Each structure stands twice: as C-alpha cells, then as structure tokens.
Amino acid sequence: MKPQLEKLALEGRFSYLARHFKRPNFDAPWHYHPEWELTYIIDSSGQRFVGDSIEPFFENDLVLLASNLPHFWRNSDDYYQFPFQKSAEAIVVQFPQSLVDDFFEKVPEFSGIRRLLNEAARGIKFSSQVATMVRDDLLRLPTLPDGERFVAFMHILLMLSHDSSGQLLASQGYQITPDEADTERMKRILEFTLAHFQEDIKLEVIAETAHLTVPAFCRYFKKRTQKTYVDFLQGLRTSHARQLLTSSEMSVAQIGLECGFQNLSHFHQVFKRHTGDSPLQYRLKVQR
Image 1: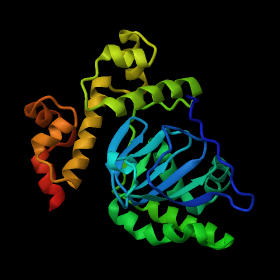
Image 2: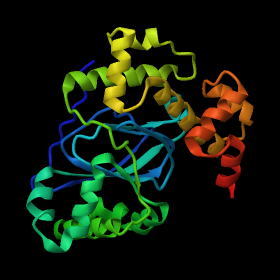
Image 3: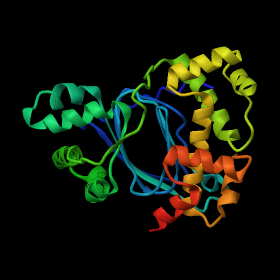
C-alpha cells in the first residue's frame, strides 16, 4: 500500500479550495498534506484521528489542522455496510502555506488569525457555539463568486480566532514527521488497530505488523506519539465507548464488551481515567 501523501491541485483562479462532500462514508485513509485544512461535519458520526488524538465526532464538529499534521475521519461501522443507508457530509476548506506566509503574516490586523494558526500545529476543535455561528457561512462558501468567496473565508477565520473555548487535539509532545516511510508504518499500525481494537491485541502481533521487534516497536511508538501503545489502544476503546454511550441504547456492560474491555470493572477504571467520569455519569451528562 502506497504512503498517503495527499497532493492537491488548487484551482487557478482561487487562492484556496472549498468543497462540499456528500458520500456514503468518509473514505480518505490516514494521510497528511502541506495544505492547511478546515473541516466542518454537516452530518455523520465516528472517530476523528489527529496526530495522537482520538475522539468521537458528530455533526457540527469543526476542526482546523496545520500543514502536514496527519489525520483522518473514520465513520462508525454502520456507514460501511452495503446497501448504504447513511451518508457522510462535510465542508472541507484547504489553503496553501503561501497564503499564510504572503497574506496572514503580513497584515497587522490579522494578529488574531496568526495566533490561531500557531495553535493549529496541534489541531484545534472549535466550540459547538462558534461552530454553529459560522455554519451558514461555511455552507455557502463553495458557491460564492470569486471575490466574495475570499472575503467570506477571512471573516470565518476572524470569527474562529475569537473562540476562547477551542480545544487543542494532538498532545504537546507529538512530533510531526511528514516522512513517507514513517507515515506508511504508522498507517499499518493504525489500520490493524482499527480492525482489531475490540479483540485482545498482543504486542508481539502489532510489532510484527510494524516489522519491528517488541522492544523496538515500544520505543518507536512512544517516541512518535508520546504515549505507550497500550495507552493509545485504551484511548481508542474509550473513544468508541463515548460514541456508543451517546448514540446507542446499549447497556454500559454491553458497551464495555463491544469496545474490547474484558470486564466491567476494568472498563470503568479506564473510562474514568480518560474522561473523568464513569460510563454512566458520562451518558447522563450527555443526555442532559
């Protein structure tokens, strides 16, 4: 499988791309690209991967990513079952580093946008309130005439720069290494983990997937993500549990088993460590 460096062709008369996607599911793999990206989820749910961050996503999810930050959005399993009965819909805006260097960095009035872009090195998830505020502007962005299109995008970024409740995604120590061989190795690790996280994954098996010995794999993964593979796996299981607690009527015990936890007490312990709440407390909080 080829390393996933995505190459974008910006249209000649536009300084950035603004596209409206609607398809059965999000099918882009774990990838990176030199362009910056603003993604707004109109409809669908699943798990969002940004650097070493794993979180559930739902509609009205709005995220800004810096250049070369690895990412992908994976829908929940029912989006991939044929015949397709659901759809994944999003607005994706991508702009080049040259726009940052030649415009945002040189206009004094854009100091707020520059601060926003600096924070986006780790990825930013904007608050639901701000995402709702810019929703209509984002929806009409791909269809606006040329000049209005550019001005509308500047207005969106200015509004986002005032969001004091945004959340940084990748950990502070996360290392961005846009190297094709390294990205291919991480892609194999991620794909195997996504396919088998509900099972008991042995370190020997995942190390073999990465073509490394167990000690070398543990060192590699910790250096690359600033966390152990076990922590990463538990984070993925917890993220899936959060999604099921929010969107299904399964019992807490059923969800724990569905997410790969071998017993209920271990599920409670890991979930509370990652979220600060027990599974039941989390479900009640979301319902309120």
